[in-house]
Length: 510
Image (cartoon, rainbow, N blue to C red; front, top):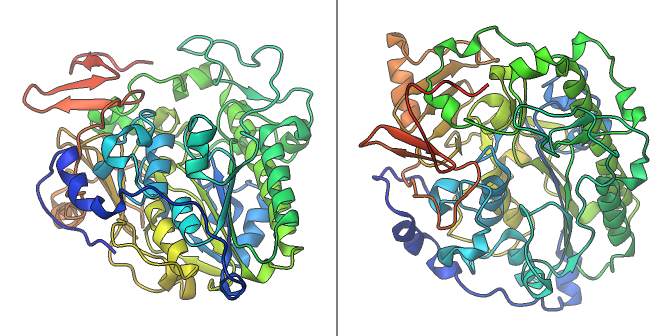
């Protein structure tokens, strides 16, 4: 386990040389386990959801959310009520979890690059590769990594077997919503149209996963990863899922008018110009309720697909030796803080579902300690009795899986581009941006993060305590970084968003 060190920020190449030196070895193919090894090894079913915030029944993020299968999984295992991603964007979040390193360590901040194209990460041992080294058959379908991995040879390096790619699946003949502020972007759509659940990519991913579980050889331990696309936009669901939710304003999340008056201007830079529309646009075009209802409908649909996989495990002969973990890469705003989408350092964007169930996990555990997706890698390694690694930046959650009240030595840290970090403890959220502007929220009295306390003198000591958890390593963007990338030149007080400068006097894009 790596411990937090408080050192000056260093460059990308310098820091990685010391952190991952011993991990730069090509991962060998899986060996056949002995019968004795197989009987004591646990299988792993690793389920990822894209853009899923805390609108999950047992997390109480939305009072009307219907997720019976995730809720029953949480009841038979341990759920983390205060779990947070390491980046509010797909590629850096997934890269962080799968490599066991923070975005501020790897320099992977944007939707590009694919980490295998970065010299220092080219041979980094991922979580599934570590399991393959220990005799596991590794399988995957849907979205686990962000984007394409490459040809068949490149895929074989990452997993033994690949199922369907998943994705949105069937789409309407033309967009349901029409143009949004950045044009006719194909992802900016939501609603229902005549189609079948079976035609959706997520249904096909679940069907493939169920078949792999049913046909698995009992003597061969496996690591099965299945990634679900929804509720990522475009949020399309069949009418049966829409019918779970009322078509009225009870669906809308609570917001505060002019919520960003006490928020630093730099916060806008993290999502300066994106396809996702602002709250103003979706209200003006009467789309707020429809988007919210679509998101909830898609959440319930994905919950049902996860339920199919849980049922297949329960019906198998290895149900009592299979670990299930469910996680989301980041959250999603639906009007809170005047935006939709992710790309923020607030609760709605960083808090995610994280559930473990199976051998070694207490039933009905509800852990309020702050934890990180970064912790998944060392947790699964310890739960399954694999050789430990000393080059991971996460901390195993096994103590909390045994006793949900067990202490944690540190808070959760989320980063979005170099210099922008959020620290979440049990009570507080502290944010510092690259220009040193700050936010501070007291979750005991302000769970919606409506009142920024950073300028209040009485909380100066809280800020000092939270600052010590800011990443000691704050790497430059990795070579090839692109898409959603923000850089800041302190000497010139100039930010650059996706290659275009932002000036202090520039109006915020609407």
